[in-house]
View 1 (cartoon, rainbow, N blue to C red):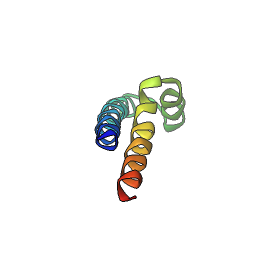
View 2: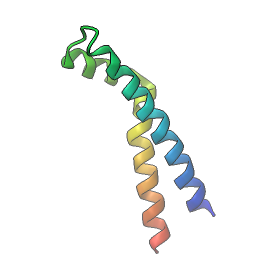
View 3: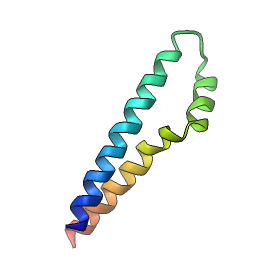
View 4: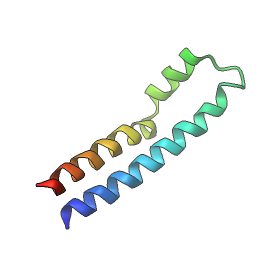
Length: 66
């Protein structure tokens, strides 16, 4: 049961972080360079939800295999 909760929480975090990151991609056509975009992504906490969510998903899947 805990593995499923970890999986669903990770999925929610990955979706939220991915959505925010894609939303910030709209700033690139508005004149933001790729380097400035990378700095912006590193400075926003909500963009870290995506890799943390993916890590939680992978952990839950690996725990379910055992």
